[in-house]
Image (tube, rainbow, N blue to C red; front, top):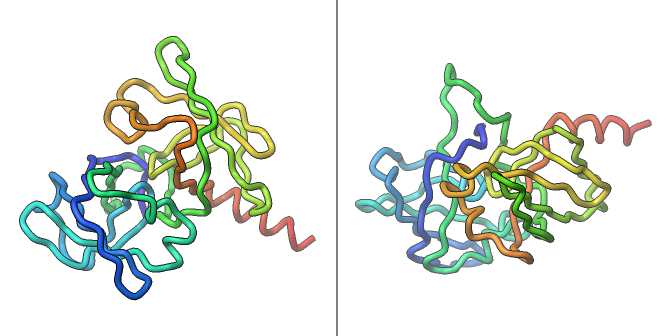
Length: 195
């Protein structure tokens, strides 16, 4: 479980394909605090640390992960949002984030909003994922509040601190992002499908 509050950024320094898996080597300031077999969210995708070497570590994305996320689009020197799993007893500053991405969305619009930046994202409604006004959503691992919820799109307002300390500063119209919808909304949607 994660909170969606990004700890730091990491840089992709190597990518290796092996039998359908993608091994990502990440350079980060938190590497010296990691252990092998530890979960770390990379742009919201929960991946397991499999090797550590100085300030770099390796995680592996399987085909299922590559099919459902933007991890397979990463290139060397790309920057990713990083968050270690939460500890029991810590404050939950964001919301309950599983690190299990539901789908990839696309940035459709970026607007300056007088002190914040509003990003609008589009997603595939055939997946039955939903957003609600003032509900929670995770974009590339960042816990955010939905504004302007519509049938296949929603917006989020990013404060300057979040903009500067996450990958949001690198987004452009057309950027593909990992979306994890609120787990409670997913359960409600599933329960209603049985009626």
